[in-house]
Image (cartoon, rainbow, N blue to C red; front, side, top):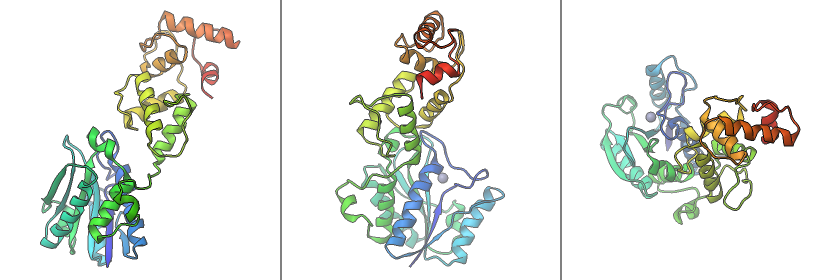
Length: 312
Ligand SMILES: [Zn+2]
């Protein structure tokens, strides 16, 4: 048995996925890599059908299909996440055989507490139309749904897909009690590191373990940070939170009247004054005071030396 796994999009700049609370490309990759790994662990042959480059979108799709057809895989699986305002999981197929596989996969993903949108007709989808074997296109959830993204776990989704395809899971015991080994998320690892640099402590008052795992402590720090910078407090390592964190870590120059609300709010939080995002008289006064105490150039401007005093 030979599986062709196509990690949706991930072929920039011509073929990139949807962007919502999280990026589809990231999720497809996290899930797809694990599906490949798990199928191999179960001793199946696996062909990665994801192209490393393409000249345009059509070429990206063509290469995926061509790889599957040339390698004569037995089943083709394209892995995606949805966007557009819905929630839940759905799997597309055309042939009867494809739809049977699709049904097992969508039911397996739905056991992770996703809305089961069922098997859908995929006769409009290029990769399903042009592959010569039973083929499915998995939509693991919606990248713009808060519920779906809070639930998202690459390890569990990959286990479910493999379970649907083969009837087995690699970490059978772990996944059955709903307690699969948490997956390390590189983006989250960066977030945890950034939160530690910014001294955003967890609910126990400590810095985070930089382990790439979304646990209660990390969620509490993410929420605290979102509150400080004025974002929606959802505890998700989402794009807006990443952008805000990167903004502050870049140590932007802040002086009277600047409009960097996110960074101003952070400085106000650090200086323990009212957080309103406006660098006015009160903020300038607080900065002057901080500079005086720290014996650094007293100018009321948050430049690199002042930043270096606050975040190391
Ligand atoms: Zn997609």
